[in-house]
Length: 508
Image 1 (cartoon, rainbow, N blue to C red):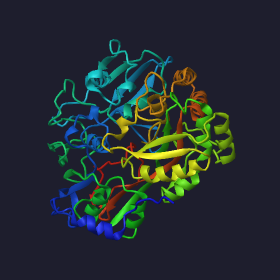
Image 2 (tube, rainbow, N blue to C red):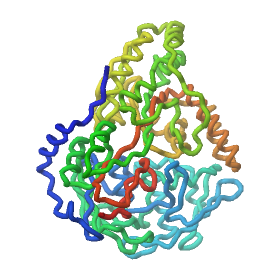
Image 3 (tube, helix red, strand yellow):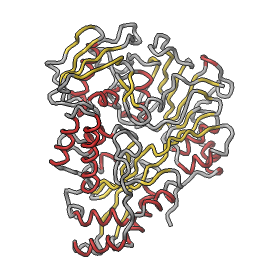
Image 4 (cartoon, rainbow, N blue to C red):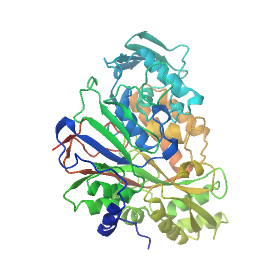
């Protein structure tokens, strides 16, 4: 049986010994009040890193952007919208004109955040030359018609109705920058911390911005320490070299819960775990083969073994527990007999395919072996193939026919548009294309009544559940580990307002 590779006490201690290259934190263990420097450990991407918030893709990019900049809105834990730089907003009856009122806020150079800054930022994000992962969120804006009505009020005009448009304003890589900004080597933002120093693959140091609109941070300095290996991040936390370790696996979390020096903050079911089966090519172009895999896997066993019970079973839909997720949907149960019958009908008995996997997520490789075992019970021969973690999510766009994927918490509408809609999808690893799905989604976004919009969104999701090739087997808990001396941090799903938010942190 495949088991999850956890972190034993011995391996933690061994990893501590390999951290000599990290400078020791003189204030750790005695840091008090606003004079302390908070050190956080995140995996990074090396020479490709930048502090340009509009090109960020990794969690460390988003965390640094959250510290340096701000967005018009943010997401609550259920991915509903809450105000940030936007004080208020309203749509006209057509859903094509949005009037936004900004709060009083200042950039780090003392200049006010204005409507022109917002328009410039959104134009830059929408520009293909920027290569922003958030570009598709703003391609519907008619920038020729959109305008600043005053310094703190703007009007955004859309080419087509969208009553869910504010969801776009809080997405990763949608931060507001001063109009005309092109150089991010020493960026100026409006966030709770201002730039001190940074180079790709090295620590980033930020300092408290006392004129932040939300009030000054409780710490003087914030440092992002690059540590790619999960066991090394945990060891750095235990040795006192960092205060915060990002993305801790379930087994490591269980080990750390016995340590009085640290606390584990767990956002339950924070990350979707799924198989992406390409429905534009054999064998999954045949819906019978796709359905056989859906019926052949044992989701309960995957959660119990791979996630060490630290998660919830998936039902082949993204967004369990979030706003607009269909409620009261019967679970998809394992049915090996029906799965084998479907394979016989499709002439696919004994079918072989590779399952692409990597260490990009700590659960991918353990899940591969167990999935191969489960699918062998219905007559499929599955061979896991490990790809490089650094390029995995770009490699699986076109390579192979089956791959692991994951997605952290996002608004359901954003996920549907980003991953499944034919003309705006990015990260659509299954190559799903459906005019019927697109029409349902467009109709939902153009519907003013929230209840009717919710019904249409549910209908679109149920269609994609059967045909898109996305087999969601579980939702893993999201764990971070922090020093027990820290205050002001709580468990929060990734991409939410309180995830990786450090301006409210203090030392006990």
